[in-house]
Image (cartoon, rainbow, N blue to C red; front, top):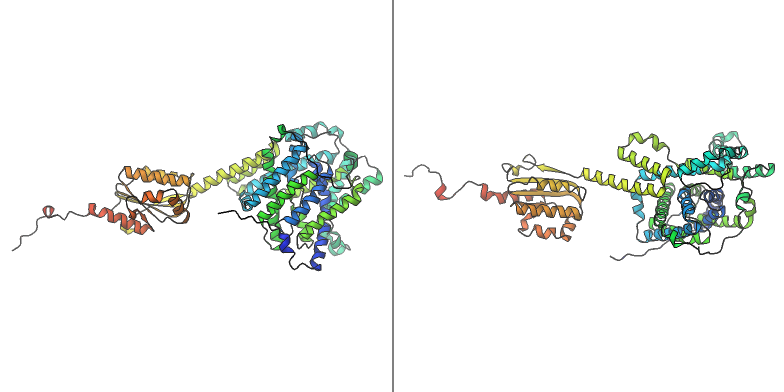
Length: 577
């Protein structure tokens, strides 16, 4: 069947019946989200080893494209904390030029995933794998911010876990108390603004209205003002990066090296998978909040377009962002117009207020990312591990440790492989067989030696063929009845196992009668030729149900098992007169 190409952004449906009241709501939501996105975009870029404008450019370009082309009504796209670790590793090993290439290639993969309608497959990644690498990423984000949180003088941070620990320990003597004070105060303001201000309620005037303003913005404004007024000796965006450009960059083709680019296959796949997982999980969260259902394939295609275009304009990888999406929903967004507005507001900020961003202290951005890392992790899952089975515990903990100690790519590979092995084991353990006796089917009475009836359950695939192999080792004398009514799936290996069973039965002179082939098992039996070979000797060897199969088998036994009736073999009776 030909693949039907479908590219229909949710924006087209959302604009049906669009009016001024909805536009006002979207405009207000977009303004609020832009305020939240500005510090996060800069912080994510800096933590990834890039300049702060890379995050802002991504929030503008990718944010606009994801909202206008995506499959969700309210999802906000942009740089995300989940990418920090992998982006930093790519920049450190291969350089910014190859990061541009890897991001663009991941965009191609994302678009193809959506085009081939693979959006729903991302949901098949087990929650243990997602929680494991999410918590691991959160730890690495927090660890990478210790340098600016403490104001340590480290020229370049290593990308590996033990290297980061060594660099932090070796430079503790350069600790800056002013930076720590700014960071600690900023973190206190962020946490307190969100948790304590709403609790004050009617006791403080305007507390309800003030709580709408994000704590990160309050901390950013206060920290910037204090550092500027008192001239505190802490690093700022201007002192480290020379400020932020006041315009979007022009298209630039990177001068990458093939020697480095050929090693980008796994980082590219990791960026694509991570972007798909993050965006679709975020879209599902948004669906639950607004009572809607997103189009996962359209969302992946929009993510692909955004990630292909953005890096050539100075951006970094982008995906759906939960914090900004939730903010968008809570502020009344009704359509993708809100996300497009947020991108345009950020563009205005770049054009008008870029010089002001130069005074933002990096210690404050470190505090913001510390808070993001804490909220990002599912820390309660560690306490709940004892209530889960051993495979879940091992998978979650292993993916977490591999993410932290080694590499996110290795962690995802291991997690998916471990999940597949566990799934195969569990499905194979659910597949079983039971022998029917005269207590189940009275027609079997008196035929125990000559006739066996086995009923199989579950899936007959490469991990469960031992069930069929066990039947080959203990065949009955005359007839074997195999009931497959409760077998929901048979793969090519399972069909081959049934073929081998049929051949073994015929070599040993045992008749094989199969019953209950339904749907997929019947289809693969027909496609592999098993059905034709099964009926080669008799059409009666394939029956619709086990009762008919038993009747057929018993009828085939009757001529042999019935008492002799020939005249010469008859017992003498009383003489006739």
